[in-house]
Amino acid sequence: MRSEPHALPATPPAPAPWRDRLLAWRHRLIASPAFQRFAAAFPPTRPVARRNARALFDLCAGFVYAQVLTACLRLDLFGILADGPMTPDDLARRLDLPPDRALCLLRAAASLGLLTRLRDGRFALGDLGAALLGNPSVAAMVAHHALLYDDLRDPVALLRGTGGPTRLSGYWAYAGADDPTQVGDAVVAPYGALMGASQALVARDILDAYPLGRHAHLLEIGGGEGAFAVEAARASPRLRVTLFDLPPVAARAARRFDQEGLSTRAATVGGSFHDGLPRGADVASLVRVVHDHDDAPALALMR
Image (tube, rainbow, N blue to C red; front, side):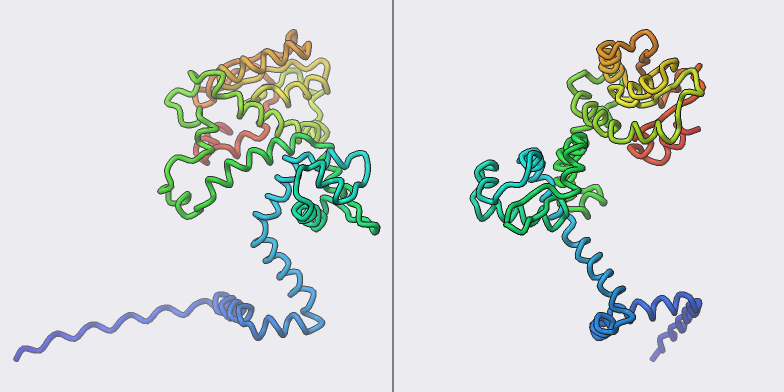
């Protein structure tokens, strides 16, 4: 009877470096329910335990927070409260909601700092709600999140690419076009409006951080419908501006420049940055552009 050859012994794994072993021990400790109870009760570790518990809760509840904000904006709750506090019943009538559900929304908004509940039971704007009231561009960004939430309903399928076409890809229809320079005005209008709103959020901060008065000619790359270019031109009266974007987007920006009375020193050029950039400017800006692209085209654009 022929004997089978013995299997070679497995090569023992190399011992983990001491830092890895320390991390593994720490993670096992933190994962232990007994240690969690101890840390929550022991005075020196109690603040850290509570802070971590709160952070974990926020991770789990973040989607709910965003939906509370969405409901407040869609119902114009902050605008309704702009003139002063109101009772829950009065707000329910203004919001066209059943009283119990209106109160649920009001309490949720107050828990997030969007509203404040007064001692007499009325609700007023909170600091965050008042700040949002002064930044209408945020509402446009939040409305756009509905598309993203649909795409993230199954995040694993999204990451694996097995979920089919995303709603955002339809919103950014020109991103998947064979020749994005040939897409029509109707295709770029929704995203162009959103980009204009989002650029308005940061335009003033950018210009405060880096005044453009020392420059003669700004090239605004991917400038959308001209939100940042208009602010830059207003802030520096002698600055010439060239906005570069896809042809239908650049055409929309040209109309805005004309409406703003800037057509004598603000021009547009239509094209794709994959094919090169206009020359002649002594400063260039990319406001909320680079992070909208994958690494390879973003690096090519920066070079």
